[in-house]
Image (cartoon, rainbow, N blue to C red; front, side):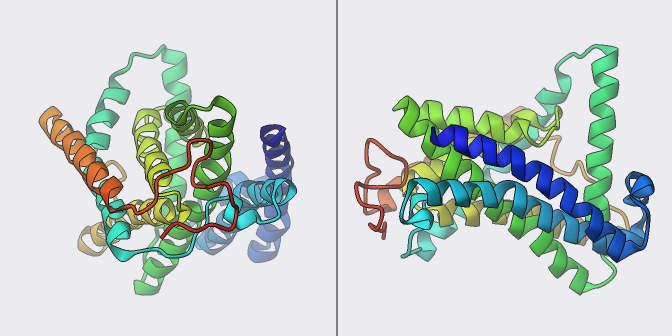
Length: 302
């Protein structure tokens, strides 16, 4: 029932979030909605694009998770996995997990691209990937350091916050209670997390990052750690794009996607080692019947 509520609210919020972008776009740009798809490619309207990105993602992902948590619990934020007592050592390890996973993700990106496709599917996926890359390039337009700061908020922080609330805080916990199997819950959630980005060429890499984030949340029981890890990953990408722009005045969206197999192997070993260290640092074990919660909603993990 909780899953049905979450998906039903997500569907409704998806429609609302999409519709809300129309008046925002018209007010901020003075343009008609009929030329919106083409005008969104115009660098002059990147401000409107950034506002739309923040508003729509909050409505589509954060709102349904928060409402669902409020319906089923008297303590919605605790139900979603928000805990006090974040420790900087654990936060650093969580960030290092994402950093060490990057060579593995790069190698898997190459493997993902090598999967054979029909001509029709390849054309379709290439078109979707091109549109996605163009949007990111526009939102990562850097005219000055302030633009870099705005990009950190729009591209790095808000997606990390709302996606972790929806996928790890809500969906992963629902699947765990449903399946009574944490591994299955993390894998299924990670598959949905990757699929919802609508990027075939990035499916396996995002699935891998989703697994890392899922286990960070599962082992810690504190959603802040997966949010911080997700933010670190996004912020690192934004910083690389900013550095590229400052140095060369152009952006390479495929940076890091040509890692050799041995780098991927070393990366996987480093991730396993860090997870072992991360688990040893945790003072509280995760309860067997729930991800990130004990029998009391008000308990905290410190």
